[in-house]
Image 1 (cartoon, rainbow, N blue to C red):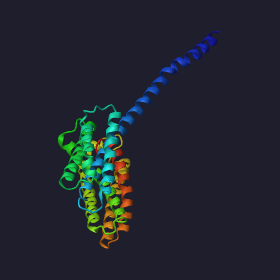
Image 2: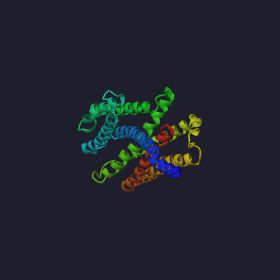
Image 3: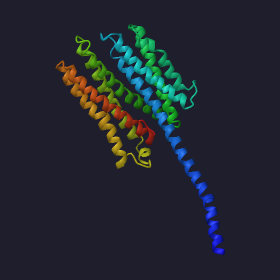
Image 4: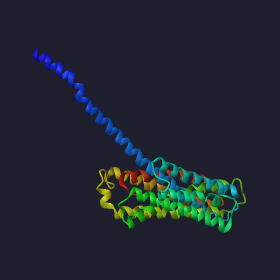
Length: 297
């Protein structure tokens, strides 16, 4: 009888004892999902705004090319979609309209009719400058949300690194589109694509230098992470970021420059197309590293 009662007592109380642990597990899972979602949302906002800056900056190096207003409208619309997507993600994350990043992105959006329309000359330049400044301000503001305790130098270097990453992707992508434009405007001068290719090289070199500088200045913090950056796993991701996102595109830019010396825009465009894929992969890895280590590497 005593054994039977104990067995019944155990059977009766088992669901009661397991229910709290099951509820805690569900709550922990929900918290983890919410944390990951918030991180992805913040990185998505930054990606949109830094890439929009890169597109607009690259557009500044095609001011006199006789490509027609459609080219500027397409690339300006690309920047607008990125800026608006970042604003949408920010508002979806319960940011107010008065959030500095949202305000900066909205200023860049408001300048869209100037940098994308048929307007040329000084007015176009003013609109483009407003768009770039708004996108840059929005990116820095988003990094301030990401790194609230960072000092001015760290925030400045991090912001420049993020903008350089966006410029790499934006300039290579815009150069690839310009390369396709030679199919519709056969007499378009080679100098325009050569100049833009040099911009991509400069942006890759700048990004590489800033990544190296951030790693050097913050090596102790980066190595104290649960998965140290300079351990095997961290070096794999950092190596992928540098090799795929910067060094290989640098090689491709040199190959494109060689093709352009022989007036071969089709080969250069194909090379730039492959490079666009590589720099977007590199940008994704950069954001993943930022999510893990807190710096835009």
